[in-house]
Amino acid sequence: MTEVNDNTAQRDRSPAYPFVPLEIALARLAEFETYFKRSAARRGKVGEAWGIKSQAYADRTLAALGYFGLLEYRGTGKDRQIVVSDEGRKYLRAQQEETKREVVKAAAIRPRQIAKFWSEWGGDRPAEAACLDELVLKNDFSEAGAREFLKVYDATISYAGLSDSDKSEPDGGAKSEAAEGEGAAMQTAMKPAHVTAHVGGAAPPMVSLPIGRPRIVMNGDHLDIQASVDLEGLKQLQTMLQKYAEILEMVAPKKDEAPN
Image 1 (cartoon, helix red, strand yellow):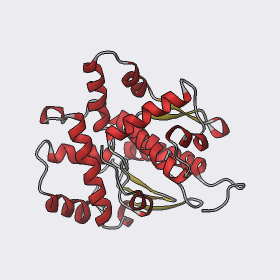
Image 2 (cartoon, helix red, strand yellow; image 1 turned 135 degrees about the horizontal axis):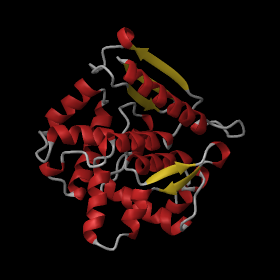
Image 3 (cartoon, helix red, strand yellow; image 1 turned 180 degrees about the horizontal axis):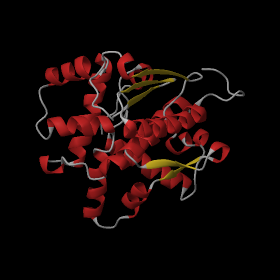
Image 4 (cartoon, helix red, strand yellow; image 1 turned 180 degrees about the vertical axis):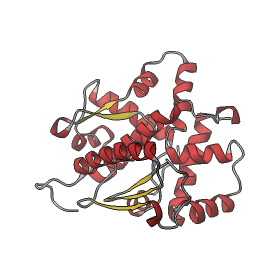
């Protein structure tokens, strides 16, 4: 299994992606299930399932499982807890290998960044240098983040055994967006959050957006927002912002927590 550099994941400001590949995420899922049985877990306790004492590292592990759609939050406010998702339970309970493989293939391309580049690259990924240029120059990755992402991408695609026939997203856009939200909800927030928004003509030249497709990236302690929206896109943006407001409120340090 491929591990990644935790220090890079902690500092990097690249677009969000799971910092561990799918094979490791599935192993962490099984450990979570073994430790907590079928009970829900509070965020501050989940590291115990993996022998992780650092809350920051535990949060990034949670985020990875959220991006793959294996864990999710239930409840609100103080009652919010982490549980195994329907897809996670399906993987853990399935007796037929074919069923497990279906879950694995769907999970592999659930994270938005992996799905995006799988749809472009398919089973014959371009050379390393070409991919790094595309990630850094066209998609806002840092150089270190691009290299780490390629490690996660290659390991995940290889483990899932994806072929070009799997290019269409099996869950549909709605489930992918939901998994993105779960992953973002589980990311570490090092400081109280603030929001930086760029809408319509005021957007910086980061990426050309089609009308109606807002772009929100959670960068640790703040959001980067770009949007060129019509009425339907505005409604979608409002819904997304409400969800991210809940996420930022939830992961912001509590008053009784010592600062990092």
